[in-house]
Length: 121
Image (tube, rainbow, N blue to C red):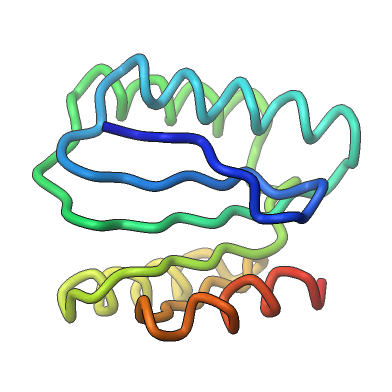
């Protein structure tokens, strides 16, 4: 289940994730990203992962369609908040792959620092 949240940053696409990401979840995030891109140009992303049990193939396809259409150029920073070492490793790989986006991992105890990181864009 994915829930959109407000972290007090106008151009932030922010959500919490628990369980499996569905196509509808991905569409909701991407609609918010598109709207904020229109309003603000650049966007930041805040992901809070409580537990992760997978992603539907249809959700991956939706994300790929968005990336082809809108590109990555509008995303400036991503903060991933979780307490799982494997997620931290994935974030490090993504940060190395997507050099134009500053992607950082934070623990739940570091949530305030994650939000501050996104405010310093």
